[in-house]
Image (cartoon, rainbow, N blue to C red; front, side, top):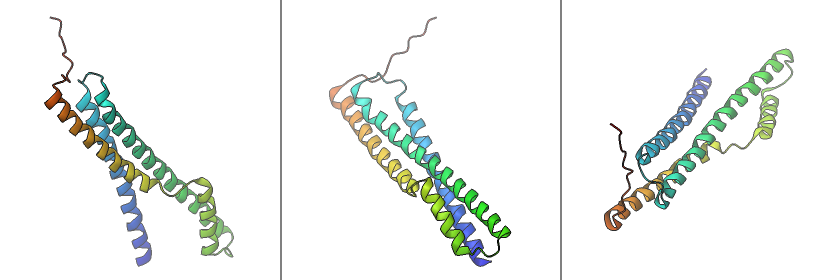
Length: 151
């Protein structure tokens, strides 16, 4: 019973971490878009665009991990039903069957890449921000588009 509760708690924490990283990546993308929405399209926005693309990769890795987790539980459920029908199948055989099925489905590294892409995107964004400060402090390039209203 304690083991089942521990496994359930660990799975809950893993899911929370995946969803947390998904929300952070989405917030970073949104913040970058809002921060640059009135800027003229210029070469110095390339790092900001690159940061958005990297965060998008992080977001996609998180979605792939969720899909993989759903597949894992579906496979587990199928094999437990198989065990109910055939009591001679052991837990070890079920684990091996599940691992074989998951190895066909894809790599286990989605969470690692989700986190790494989030960090890399943050580094690129900080670089863009420092570059932006330098350009507008020392080079005096106007960065805002003037919005003219008719009226």
